[in-house]
Length: 104
Image (cartoon, rainbow, N blue to C red; front, side, top):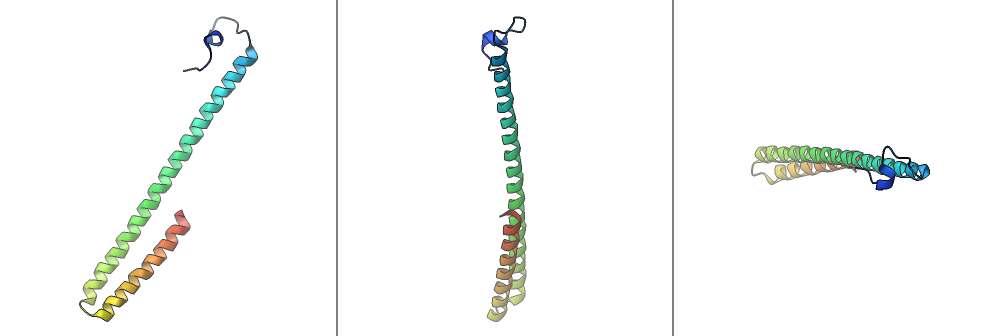
């Protein structure tokens, strides 16, 4: 819908001020262009956020899998349990650095 005043919107009549009509049309084009650019930025941010969330979930899944697997193997041995915890913490630090580089 046009935001032009009725007196400038009449198709068959001569517009009393062609310069005003041109300025209004240019303004509408600028507003439309801004709307399109804003929508593109919002879509890109949404895609980036989803990718970062997916990567974070994959990292967490791997860390939990490593922890569960390691603890099953460690049994009740405290030294082995400590090794598992250290390994998972190292994996977590690597994953976090990678996520920060990629999405931070």
